[in-house]
Length: 411
Image (cartoon, rainbow, N blue to C red; front, side, top):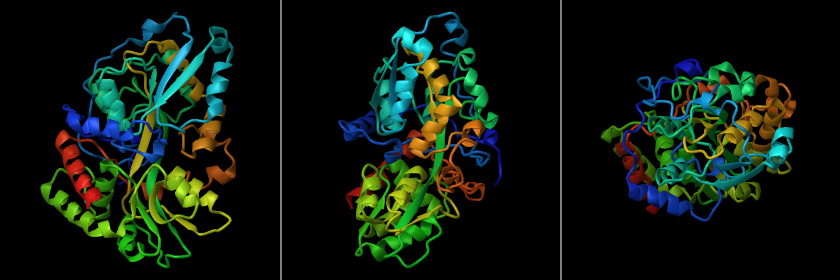
């Protein structure tokens, strides 16, 4: 079904949060390690892809009032610090240095500090536990919708974001933020898979093909699934032709049986080391996120043994967003940071670094053709028309996924 991003419909954001013990486990699991944004998507898979969105229920208004009037920042001085809570390795290091050396920022003595999370659930748990020191966060869409519903995000002062004019207008007011007041899109991508073509002789084309190859080739080398309940369960549901966000017990039972039958064919369930391991030749069959897979293909170019597969039929699309918490202590500096990331030259630097698409025509036109025309970066719409968003539609669905995932991982 071909629709514009503005047609994206998100099921009602969660009015209840996942059980605190589950959130605690997620935070503890990630404690002490910094994981690349695409190395641990966690509970934030719902996304938007340019002009390729699927209707997913009723329109959400977010249920939020503006927690901080943008006009209240007019005339306020630029602060001298930005505290960012982000996925690690998700921005070019030079982006930070150049920001602090901009004329106004340099005059203010600007500094930037980052800490990292490994999933949207960890981000939400931190904010719910009283994390009030952050000026910038980078949630995925379902997390944005939840934070809007909780009045936890600051309404953006558009007068401080003149570079918004460079973004594709279709990304300014998606249904998860219908007024466009609480987010600026960072980048977006898909979930796919890759295989070693010197070992695997078949030519898999769908995610279901991928799953069917696992038991056949596990004895030939390492096979890998992306980690996390919100990857393992919904991706398998989609492969079976089912709704990735289903709460149907029959569907959940079916996907549980399917996954458990495949478990002997899965060597590792990992999202934190698969890039380097694949480049080192240690993985023969794995799921991956498109920017990561592009890096793997480049890393194995000499051997020429990695075939990337953008799945036909169904898979996942996702996007991440710049947001300012309602409690941000340095809101003017936070706006300055977002505006800097919206500078076309900065967007070019960022895309060359992380290999994910930013919907900014001016910047896209400046990319080297090798990146701009690569389908692993610029995924054809003929594929994404069939892709879906992984949503946190209710605490019951989140808990059901978690239970299936836990049994699968322990099997």
